[in-house]
Length: 249
Image (cartoon, rainbow, N blue to C red; front, side):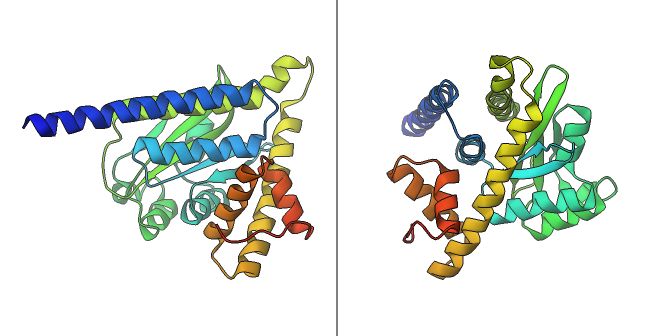
């Protein structure tokens, strides 16, 4: 019994340290010149590793006022986010519209609310979801989705931490406007969205070149960026232009 209690305590301590390290890393990122897309990708990755979710995705409001997928932890979650946008239904859209968190512990029971999304999520292997708004007071700039493979109510502490991640993302997006009077938020977001298009192109190019899946290709892009202290967007542009030769991750 004592051993079990000690193991649980150790697991909690490890998680607390990981959370502290994550927020320190995010704070360091925000005080320096940073890549918005890489920041968003880091947020979905830590959401999966620290909040018990099996997948995560992040949507941002684009220049015309619609939503666009900017980051995802897996190809399955990316496609599910795209599905929400194409069919104009799902928890993240409701979250952005209402500016409040949307939690669903059993997607099978939500066929009346989101008939197409609930089925698509089930087909992808997900059973529950929570969507958290990227907001600052009354302004909403996007949403963070956390997907789970089991039907479950998301623990309130995990939801609060996830909202803290979303708040950090919002600060990162909006800080340029605070630093430069009159700077347009839409311009900052549009640069991030344009970068994401380049990254998606690079994933396809590298996947075909290496004969691997798009997920492995993306891992190779990120690994190269980290190892060479480069921005993810710059690495992707180099691949698309044929200027970088990247091996498998």
